[in-house]
Length: 254
Image (cartoon, rainbow, N blue to C red; front, side, top):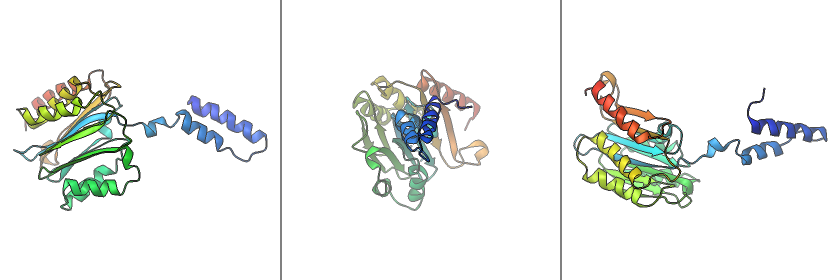
């Protein structure tokens, strides 16, 4: 049974073409692609994120929000003692593992960014932020990112976003992280809240995620995932992320 309406229409079109003597129909495949049947494959991860290092503890983290389902499954990557990466827009998810491998080899955030972007033919549509274990930060916003798009880079952090209401989104995120007090994970979430208050993603809200790593920070001290929480589909994802973080703090007293 054909449940996808795009596939159903194009299946019938393909049958019609074959009846008139063609051996196969590539037209149907192209119609499916351009009609949106494969739209999920190319949907931009329009979002705002912060990648950062805690100067006091050396913990590394990524916080992200988007009008995109389950953004935490796409954007954040981090490894304790190595670095953290956010890859978004028309995200190249290979930037995560490849970037962490390059950082682990001793390269700086700036060097890794140049290597990743230099090898990517789609760099004009990418957006990426990197922070290394020493606090060096680098970011890239390709020229074909949907407006407003841009980034702010500082010591121990970078903030980046695309399809945003305005430039104030990333500026406020950077300001709140820099000037904020309290624990590192809470500062990351506070940065997201500031971005949303400044206008956020022009398409709205849907998902958010927080990934923070430190040596032996995970369950029973057996891995580095100190905090790894996600809100995949919610009307107010940042507020829900903050609620889950409070529960995490009570449940895992580390």
